[in-house]
Image (cartoon, rainbow, N blue to C red):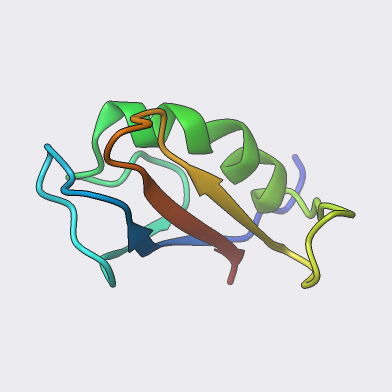
Length: 86
């Protein structure tokens, strides 16, 4: 079994008002289970990147290794998450 690392999800900005009540600065750590309280839209958008980061991926378009920014699918009240391998 491959060794995995936890990933920190942190909200860095919100354009508008999140209908699920998320606030800038909220943090969750993802290891083997889903974090309680993250809306399904945001979690669904982040999941492929969370999985990749947990197993060592980095993204060439990001300036930092082991980090990526992901927007939730709500285009009117966009929540931006920073995912970072811990």
